Image 1 (cartoon, one colour):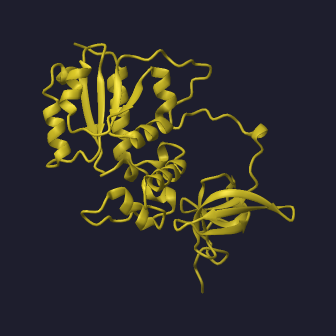
Image 2 (cartoon, helix red, strand yellow):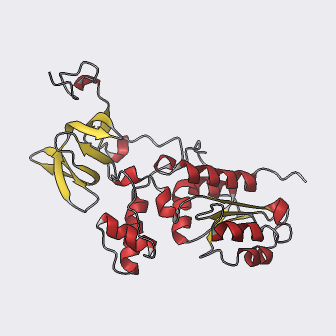
Image 3 (cartoon, one colour):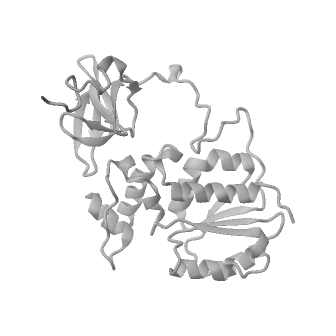
Length: 283
């Protein structure tokens, strides 16, 4: 007897018990029948019925009628027509998971700052934590490298009302980044007014959960090859020049909708930095 997912399996959810999920762009779904995994790129009408088009990690498109037979984050769901904008209830939470403060205005920017290594890092932080940071008046600035982090901190001039949080890529004991961060903390006032944290990834791209893009894991890049170029090549995406790399990042960033799409090793560090900059300092 077949005990796979379906009518024969009494432990599986029955069709009438499955949650209805309105189809929307960037949802990553698996078609149970074919095993095809892809992100929703558009929804069309065909013969009066809604049809969604999925794109897999190789850029291949397939169309599916809405209904049963799909997995979302590994769970069976029934895909239904998109909710008209006028019927959508406003979210009560920000992309970071914080409770949204209705009617709040952005606070005048503090002197304190969050520094991240590059533009992609800054864009990811803005997408997930932007609402929270505007409410707190915290500005995120890309460093474009940390080779002279100590000198940058000296120039910034940290103090009780001018605090600094730095998020460093690949901050692992024994690495160049780890030595740079340790040396940077010898800058004047750094001990009390600077917090340097980091994640273990070579680049912030890896802080996006691979499952968001329909992957089991990020591709492995051979030693000596440019990391971003290698990742895009491994995904089968265009990778020949900087324009292709920028487009690849845009596609990755577009798949991120909330904190749930990021690895905990980045989430915890960003929250730690925000707390450091916003909790009143006790001398």
